Image 1 (tube, rainbow, N blue to C red):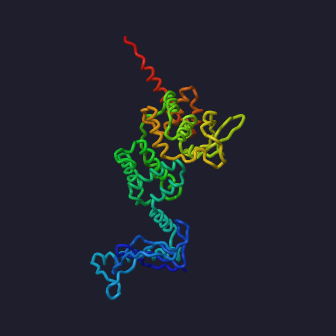
Image 2: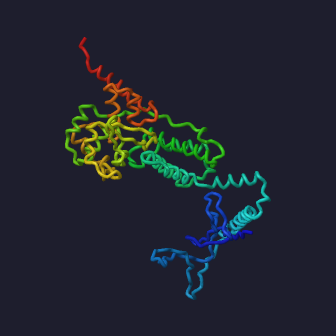
Image 3: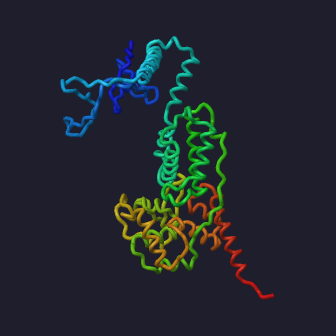
Length: 410
């Protein structure tokens, strides 16, 4: 027999939080962990004034607790409640006692519930779970650049919901409202700029992916993801360096010599910044048949691949160290965001190009030199050749622009 008691705990604002106390402890249906308490998210207005007291525990760590305020006689100072607060307390206690009785029946008399009632209880419990917290759990499971994208999507979901969104609140209207929010929202990174449509597409797709996973996990009774439309993407201009610009960059001194090696290595191999940043010497292999190559799993797509690298690219790596040592130790985000732009400017290149543009450069230069699109796709680690086709369009447009440069005066 499990005893289920309704108890109170003082909290800030002169209130008493209500919770259920179990003895012995029970197993929480959601977490699978043993617990003695279940807080009900209900509170009463206290008739005794409380204050927050700070103290140091036996381990020397600062702590705080809620304690009664004492009057001159050393007795707890009482507060006179108004009729509205008294009515609130009365109704809240009735609700809390109903919850206690239900829980008592659930843990001690499960036979009184029909199969339908048990399922309804489970649905209600799942509905009370926070979707925002669930989304964060999914984001934390992602790695590298994919994690960054999920984390950005989480930040916009957090801003839109204020962190308060239960599974029971999820419906098509919410999804459409969130879509409209993304399409009109200022960028979190820069309030002066609006969130780009393609970023909105990416973040909304993360919501759809989370809804799909929640349905698989049994947290949503229907596949809400299938009922909502995606945001249409817009074609963006791909910035890349021409062979002449890349050559100019290679001949220009960089304020950060290591960054120069990293950037040129990316421009010769197509590897992304994060992949180069995490590259260790054990991953740089050599064989008589294949020469130098890097067997790796793309951090963004998870696709397995091996990347042959040229002698020139290998020469940028420097002296070989221990297998677990990073090839480019100490390279960080400031290098790719700040020093890279400084170096580009010093080279006299006026294009709005970032470090990731070096991958675009590899793709466009390889295609322009006649490398087939399938090989380029494999070099870049694309999971689908359609991703690479956008560079073929760039090459065609470049040819079109070149043809238009020659005009005769007829």
